[in-house]
Length: 379
Figure 1: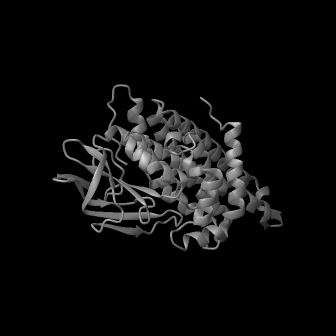
Figure 2: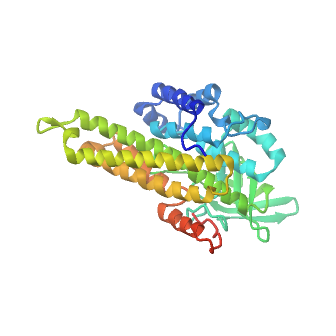
Figure 3: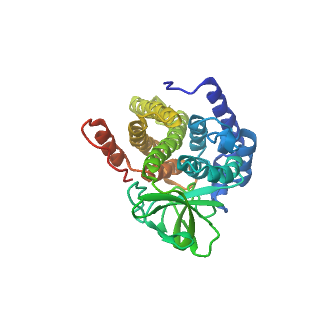
């Protein structure tokens, strides 16, 4: 197993980074989140057309580029460093991988080409009103009707759900357990409401289903959802690593420039130690995150353990770096005009998505116990 990106993946990172340096600086990010749909559609179009970011992990037979989740991971880390909003996580990772895991060839042939091109934005409604992405129950119920299936209930924290062109939903089916369904996002019996997030670069929604007709893609979806949960958790760690590096870099730059008592802040030994600790957090988080990404891309049997470890470690690493960035920037860090508060909000928001640190540590301990049975994911 390689614990570092290849030369080609490094070049991909460099290409995305150069584009984001030109098109997604702090002012551009703030402007994008202030206007519908909450991200720069022109930049998203450029990322899809020129780099193919949405197509990287989609097989060629479905209109994708035929690479892997590792390449998507590389892009997500760069987007995380720039704090760039966009539908890559919700559409090209979560929803696209749900379609692939469903095994429904017709649905993949019909929906994935648009997702891969970036012309369609897809969303997966999964978390219940308890704001947890569980693999044993959820807040939406599916009932058989004479013409097929219908969904009732509520899903929360749906990434890109307010404006999605393609909408998938996880629902309880009764005897079959959890199922994966496709619904028409324009159906009048479906209500979508945007949900403000602490991290303004994340676009979340609440979706209420009231007898919405649904097309089943996979009825016994429990095992597939467990894999999808791991994939999503690993993808989030890429955003966290990128944001952590951004927080460290801006803090080091500030401490080189800020003068106190006639000396740059960075010349004080105590602050050198703290910045060295930040570097350790960033480098270890990146290594753990990449190892989990390789396991996700290759569907290795150690994916549940690596995903749990990566999500717990990277969440805490980013929270540590964000807290240090705020403190070492002083009072300026808590002002709206400075980007340190954006790193802080990214840290707290991503720590909640697809399981908090303590939940993933508990899961990791269970997975490491040979005699214990694998418990359902409940985060």
